Image 1 (tube, rainbow, N blue to C red):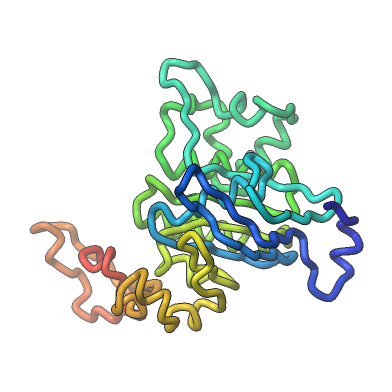
Image 2: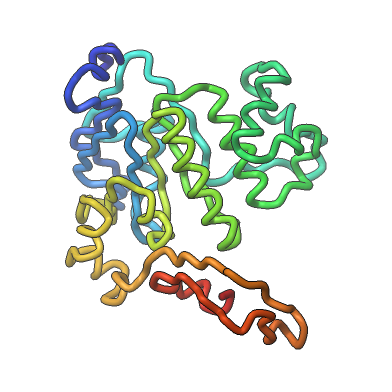
Length: 276
């Protein structure tokens, strides 16, 4: 069902996409059960859940890549969706530059590609071979490719997969800036709740059905969330670490040049505890 995007945007709820009663089974295996979901203009929604929870399958249904057994998807007419997939396999022996990758399915001018790559912080890589890119660089290239569509909704399936912790934080910061600049809605799938929670507006906890929905600080207190992620899951937070000194990396990095080590620390992220 399609309704004019202008009408949706003028509506109080600004709904761009709505899923109603989505269910899917593979044989006797129930993948998704009675999923209801709405995406509003300008919000960041993060879907979390354990492996096998059906997160990527739900994304593919919302995008129309596969069909559900039951339920319906309502989209705004003229809705433009940019999609960054979880995995994109490229043959390592295929000669493919960043410019060619971005223009594989739609032609763009070089200047437009440079502008999109500049926004994602990798405009200097436009002529590099895709096979030479790091995980973080590749994700930024795919993000630039999606932004060239000028999407109303940006769908990101595990955008930081294969990216180190520092790269994760930088990518999530970039995603927040993209939302702020373009005003597009963002639907993101992630395992890294302790990072995503710092920038998301609404969290959906999925395990073949929707376990809980709410603001980040509400979801971490929910029984279903704690059952999936553990009783200590509410201890995670984004660790902000600001130096007012320099570390001398002699003797294995144990010497601090300025003995007044005045850090501004929030709760320390367990993944970063050895990097302070």
